[in-house]
Length: 272
Ligand code: AMP
Ligand code: MN
Ligand code: MN
Ligand code: MN
Image 1: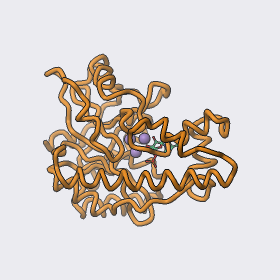
Image 2 (image 1 turned 45 degrees about the vertical axis):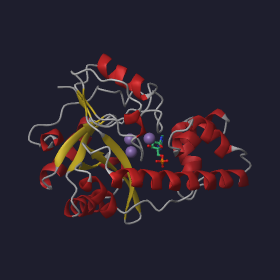
Image 3 (image 1 turned 90 degrees about the vertical axis):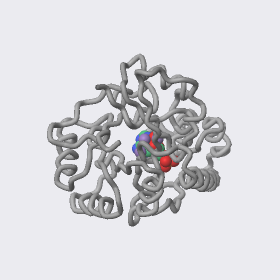
């Protein structure tokens, strides 16, 4: 089975439309797909028709906060018409808009004009993210590539950073559970936490009703897959698999081209 439970469309910061993404998934032979845009379910009301051999699992990637650390929590197999989820996406998109305005003001102070307007234009009506600022700043010649632009402008203590009070981990998990979904810690190794902190995050997550860790993500090495899988086993969490595909330009996050889950972990799809 080809399973990919984490990817983005242009309803957030991916480049493909929801229907183009579905076509790509079909081309790649994906059997089970979840579109998990940042803080929005918008893609699901745009998709036309899905052939019966492609199982589409409603999902979302929520921005959340654990202690002072921003974390991403994927909600899989949620009821997409859940009021609590819809209300939360509206609130989060408002927070994103306010943050984007602040980022624009901050960049103006270092001589970069109209960043908000340009990011907004690139987002084209979708959920606005730092990715859209990053695309503008690269085009504008302020940095040579995406990772450079994040490092120089868009992270804490840099001139284009504005903080957001995302919902707590506790609240995020409760929204997903209330919608009948499975809460999953997205890309657990990407937060660059110390081993102790990562263990604490997983313990808290589990205690609050979290169910799974993303064990295979687009660009991780076999050693990272083993490490994440050991955490899943140790804390009795299910394991998810998702490319975090955003666009076709990167070699490390291709839709439907993922390593297999290691033996001995419980696949997240057994929970639905
Ligand atoms: P946001 O959710 O608005 O804070 O934006 C986060 C998004 O920006 C992530 O989902 C990635 O798509 C992208 N992103 C974050 N950090 C980096 C980075 N260091 N390099 C490239 N893209 C990044
Ligand atoms: Mn993204
Ligand atoms: Mn993420
Ligand atoms: Mn993602």
